[in-house]
Length: 288
Image 1 (cartoon, rainbow, N blue to C red):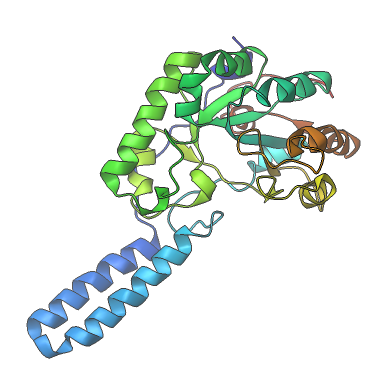
Image 2 (cartoon, rainbow, N blue to C red):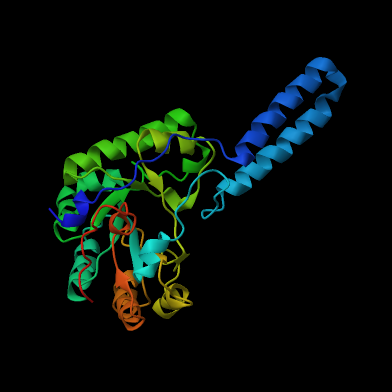
């Protein structure tokens, strides 16, 4: 088992509502009180609540937002000082792409964090085990990657996260500690469920949009433009777009991206290593 699987991460604190959520709760209480006091105020109360829910929805549709709760968009400062970046790869495992991605990572001595869909992991458990055995990390990307994920309530979130936690731990022998929402979209009900499962929400610093962009040069530019220490980069081995020649974009982009990271004097690490507690030695990254 790779060393970074045993890396100790700080515990996720108990959920606390953010200022936006507290303000929303207060607004709901005021609206109810106003209507009970004078029923004729209901149109104003309803308008205020519609506006409030519009703000909450817009916030949930902003993947890198911190307004609904903690959200890792960059590595901790200590990791940035060490010159570390995190390469994260979503939506797999895919039997036609993931093995080639692993071979490329091995060839460049790089490590990555794979946010896996549990439904796909159940179909290809050997790929998830290979990811971990070859020095990378498997984290939680929900059970089924539902397009309606941001519309779920507390029970729906609990089912999606718990099912993925159980199955990914059973398959790999390692309990996921990071969660990435499908497409990064969510709502205020997610925060308490994350805390219950000791999961840290992780988004990204920049992404290549490689599920719909078929030009590798464009994807690469989006990822390396202003590349710096502490960045979290996003690519996809599942739902990957294809080039004009039919080749998965990630396989065209990855060698050049890893070369750019090495040329910049940076080192790829898993999120677990980057976020290890200061008093716990992190497993060394592979030399690049």
